[in-house]
Amino acid sequence: MHITKFALYILALVELILLITILNQDRDIIDSAQYFSTDGQHYLWTIEDANGQKLNQDVGKWIRLYRIENGQKYFVYENDFSKVYPWEIDVGDIDGDGQMDLYVGTITETKFYEWAKRPFFFSWEENQLVKKWTGSYIGVNTLESITLNDYNHDHIHEIEFKGESKEGEPIIEWYRWANFSFYKIKK
Ligand SMILES: [Ca+2]
Ligand SMILES: [Ca+2]
Image (cartoon, rainbow, N blue to C red; front, side, top):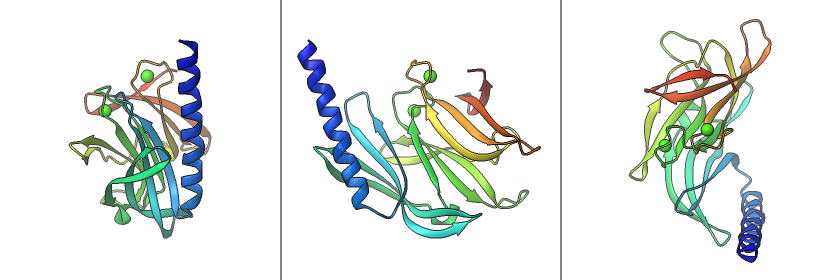
């Protein structure tokens, strides 16, 4: 039993080192995030290819998905996000259905609001990204960074929102996805 656990640990460590090697070879990766599915698959989501700067932020063009196996990167899927200037990505299961969901930090302009950093969320369904939520703001605060994190280990990823309040104070808030919306939780 202990040997198996140890072997798995070593295997995970080797995978991680190989992944770092892979990421170092690709200089044009703006951001990336990994996901280990319940059936043991190892996935890597990336934002790739420099697309200049928007709101003083380095942005990319493509969202790409790879499967990682034995230290090799196998292309699975890509989607052109150049119009929404992606700069941050994370993956997790925010609705607890066992399928991965994707957060993409974008920079967009809407009818009612100026250019701003906006969080978009997608489901991964039948080998493609499906819009889950592409609203303007979560709460009333300026977005700086979002991390999907299962902090209470119930296999559902919570949304850690870092930003700035209207008064310019740094804030960290936690949200959970339910009924097609986000609700604020106390960690
Ligand atoms: Ca899901
Ligand atoms: Ca959780």
